[in-house]
Length: 294
Image 1 (cartoon, rainbow, N blue to C red):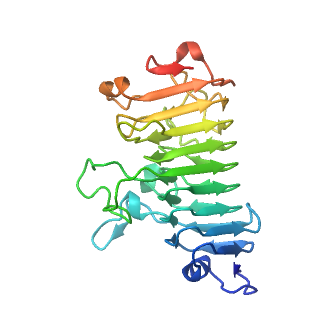
Image 2: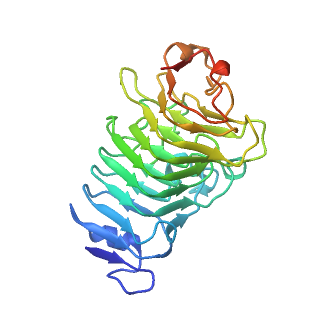
């Protein structure tokens, strides 16, 4: 086991240094502390475990609108934590992008996760706009240069990811991407940004022909937003799939559930479905016509 400790009692004082020497199947243990750094994981099958979920914190504050080499940084270079490795697992950690509200700074990724068999357990993932990216990217970008970042030219292979007992917060599109991702026993917290529409939780870009996109099972959709100001999601691409099973919906969720992002053609190709859901925000009679109850 490799130990990172801010106070100097481990093998390294930064998480990045510890991860940098980790080999396949190694475990990095991170002692309590605030680690203000960017962390990048490229070695497959390693595990990072924090000493305490709330007191083991990795944070940074890059954002899309900031200038870098004469151009804007963009969404996909703004991450605090990059997991670009198969079989990676992270437990008992807080990972945050501290840049602030999307209206001020644009997109600001906390966790950029692209790899098969990635898992996050008992973690807090904090941000505002575009908090968690579940790679891969869509097949094509809409604007030239829009995908500039670590996996811009990577093979577009569908990745399986799991998030268990995690707390994830944000505002606009704060969980997004093309992975086949299961969220189990998680809390999805929507931040009030003072707008008529305060945001969208899950913005999938599931590939055409894939059976699985996002699955939320036994999750709680919470927030500090006024009633009916947050959508469960919208389609980043037209074959988005998002299914909620036995989830509790807070009153902040809009009665329509999902939004079509102004793309009426997507209504024929998306899969948005709810099963066994409940709570003040679950109003089956008001769901958009392209949302199914199963």
